[in-house]
Image 1 (cartoon, rainbow, N blue to C red):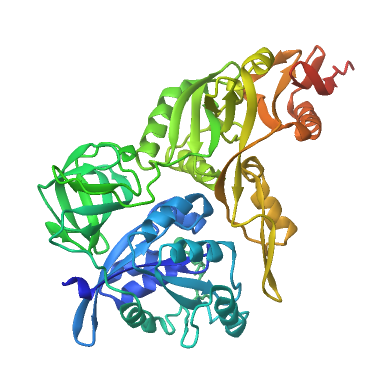
Image 2 (cartoon, rainbow, N blue to C red):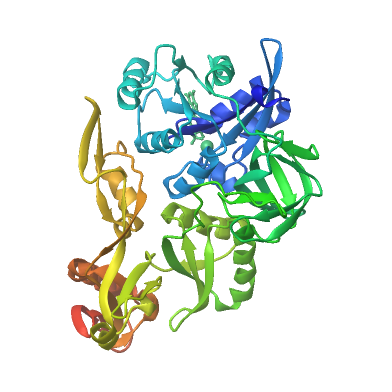
Length: 531
Ligand code: GDP
Ligand code: MG
């Protein structure tokens, strides 16, 4: 199939606006094995299905006849949560266009706006589509107006569909063919391939999804990662239809799977460029190695389960290159791990998979963001664990400043009315605030109406301190936390109170204190009740 008859596109949407349902429904119009159609082929993991979110992007190819010509349409499914923004932007880099799907009852939400800008900045053709028009609460006119006024997209012939019932879904693929440009790679140029997704398969090892930007990639070829310099040999290559169908090669413009001798998922860096051994090319722009932003300690409840849990964590991380793992020892909780995640949802999903797929019973400590210490000699260090927080004497002698990571969406503190029923607010705020219960608090205070999205904004100087929890004057390492100084008093009181409720009464007096640098901020005493 010539490049003129290929389209590489994705669907972007706020969570639950119907991306997976539409992907399934499109596959019924494109040629696909029919028995896959009922269980959302693109959402593979059980947790993804249960939570209704897509964590790892999946892709599939469809053959479609239009005006008597055969087209190859590659649908690239993007991850559906704010923690995975970087992966969304890399999967978009494999496309020339995207369908912006909006729920007719909910209208524009935070991730609709965030994803629109990701696609817009990559200069993709954007086709807006209104979904769920079968719902009684659907207000297609209002939502169409929102799309038109917020994104300045042409909505004159906008498709109004129900991905669930299939109504008007047949209008979408012709639109994709007419409005999205074909890929413009040159098959005679040296190979340039973008790795935009990967997973671990027990039988064949790491499976990569690549978009061939230029050149041709064949079975047996030797390729090199522009990021690591590692060399690999192609063992199998083909398209996702929707399962792996070997073709022996992929040409410029095509998207498909590549199996080479990668041993672990961490070798497959999302956004990395590959070229033929001895024909290096300039890497594609925008690559960043995965950057965990939320760290928590994980410990087995039963210390006898350490070895089993160690194996489970190793297996689970084989499939997730964005998780970082380090061994950690706590005086109170014993041996465990300090694990880094992209965000809190990513952490919840990891914990859920550990418990459900590997039958693990774990304690997870309060998550923390990476703080930065700036030394007098100009060097700096990231700390991911309260136990690494500098001691008071080190603070006064060697350290100039403490910095904490900030997050934002767009410019600072902006109010922007999308229409009379919706407003976008943008703030810059410490990432640590989002890591706690921000998402739940936002949902409950707005009765479920507000949605949010965030992006990294770098570090900013901050007055942060380490708060210790002391039981009978002894610090409990696993319970210490890094906080902003202004929060010490309220969080300190809250924690001592909570602990006094959960610690069983003893035959002797138990003193629970929270303290910063030797200064006690709150105190509770458990006294034995002698009857
Ligand atoms: P995603 O998070 O964007 O992938 O959304 P899903 O495809 O998982 O859909 C979220 C929910 O909306 C599911 O319960 C779907 O059955 C439902 N849904 C999707 N499309 C439609 C539609 O056109 N009409 C109705 N009534 N429900 C839909
Ligand atoms: Mg989905």
